[in-house]
Image 1 (tube, helix red, strand yellow):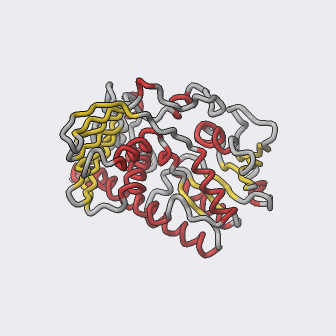
Image 2 (tube, rainbow, N blue to C red; image 1 turned 120 degrees about the horizontal axis):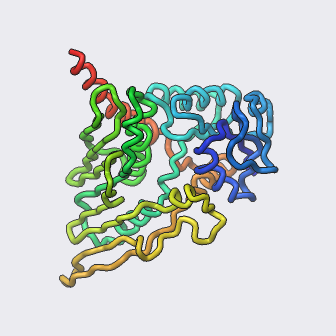
Image 3 (cartoon, one colour; image 1 turned 90 degrees about the horizontal axis):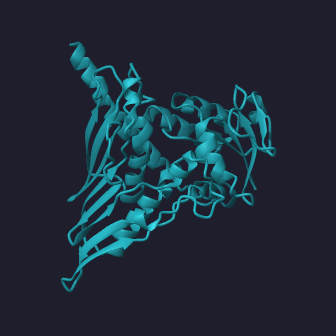
Length: 345
């Protein structure tokens, strides 16, 4: 068994972690949850809730501490956990700078401990389905991939009057799609950045459009808070055709409805959610067909961590992938700082 504790007891812990870690009772034992305030989410009888951080550090049974605090505290608490001899899983974004991230990996290596970023979106249904389509070869050589992560939530940027790196749209949401790009396509040859504050200088970063270049292939990630109709989650163009996946992975949709993973159809696409593959085959015949979606499952993050810590398997999220992601986020957000300097001058 891998015995773990959560440092933080908000939405992240209760929506994106506990529903999955608790579904692995033969591998994961959730022993404690720390929060300085009384729990407002559903509590579980088998878990000890505490407002004393020392209860995590002084418990020799706890092998892994999961950091689920607000973003600006991720690096601080991850360092504290390592200094107290605990392996660490850190919610995304991993840190605010690549320097902070490197210091955490170096400290973990010095102490012989594990630290990894929580990248659950690698196990989104839509992303897994796109991989299946690409690997089928039906599209031929891939020329372009578009990945959209859109919302219509104007009240968020409109209600935010100051710019913050940790709470920027780039750091809060590109951390999903940048990781997907790096995990599947690897390190790009070049990146073009377009990171904006649609409401003006000094306001929230609420838009980004990043192009990753791999030889002749381009992979774009595009997101905005002002999309009243979402663009397709994925569009893949190849020499022989295209694939369009309109809808996102449904795990988050169900979690927001408190429809939990113990339900057999949790997160499962219905036929109306399936993507459409259009291509010309080797005989010149035109095809247009729905592709049954792969099943997304965020439990796979915890299964991977279990295999690493208990059985010595390789990390599922490599240190170099997290460091590269941090450098990309850091570079992109510099556009905001440069715009501010230009405005002030």
